[in-house]
Image (tube, rainbow, N blue to C red; front, side, top):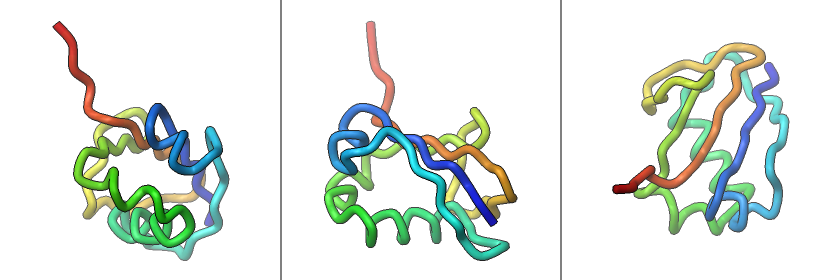
Length: 81
């Protein structure tokens, strides 16, 4: 199944791309996707702890199983004042 992964800020710098479409096995979880992304883009490993994951514009946790066509975004924590 195909999912789109979008990268923002430091994640975009670490991967060198703004987005990519990946073909992953059915039933792939967000956590499994993250493992695959870190294999493809080793610089993401350093950002893992501070990564916010969004699935279809909602917050995604590691145990969510992805579906065909899902949109996954990786970005740093949002802060401001």
